[in-house]
Image 1 (cartoon, one colour):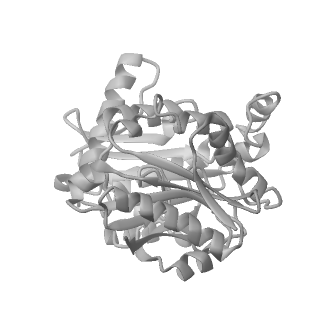
Image 2 (cartoon, one colour; image 1 turned 120 degrees about the vertical axis):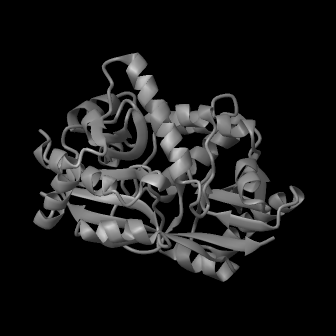
Length: 374
């Protein structure tokens, strides 16, 4: 008999957080999250997502054994922007058992139905601004930082339940090397025109850093506002994201394009700290901090997380200049980065996909968002 129960207590939440550690214990590709970070993320007092939307976590038991988990969440910001009635599911983890999976999906779906929603979309944890999408291929590789991972049998489970493709999110892989000569020549020509400047993030002066972060937020909000699935972040949500990223960013790998001190473009690249997290096994103590210090300068990969230019300034080559700069900086950095992942890019974003190909990057992973009627 399969029983799906709501998470109600701290004990339930601990089980929810720790279940993947059991499920993936023999999978060398899985990257364990920091348990302390997960506890903050699921705390309504600390995660501002709970201020505008509702979340319900579920645990599945079979013969009194924990065999799966899922979240169901509303997203009022999404529905206000898109004028629809979409609810979301996420944090899906399950043994290879269709009945267990069906029971979990049904629990999330029924909860969303009670909220008067008519589409269930996911996986999203909790929104497209967080980790989202089901890995569809290349299961022999670990995910990069803030990207998802799942067993291959999830594809069968999702399909059998009747979940249908909503959108594919593409991840590109590129070697860190000097930009192609023709692209570098073009970038130099564009820069010499002097129509805009590109600089690094300023972190030494806290007041200047705050101002730069505000610029990043404004570009992110405006540049992505017309994209499929776009969900505006509240200022508090953005601050939480910034707080989590500041300890791991490399300022020289974050670029802001400006015209007369107005921010018009942005490129954010971060080291793939999953390389370190895998060694920490989900815990900072007792020795996780030491593993972090020993390995943080050995990270071989980067992830280009954000690249955007405001609509009215597109077509000026700002994106080309920023991409050339990140390749140059990464190639000369004291820790020799070997590869970079550009992720994720909507399959429908023809301009960004074209730029990735121009940089000799290739799609090597596909993540999928699914819909099902409630």
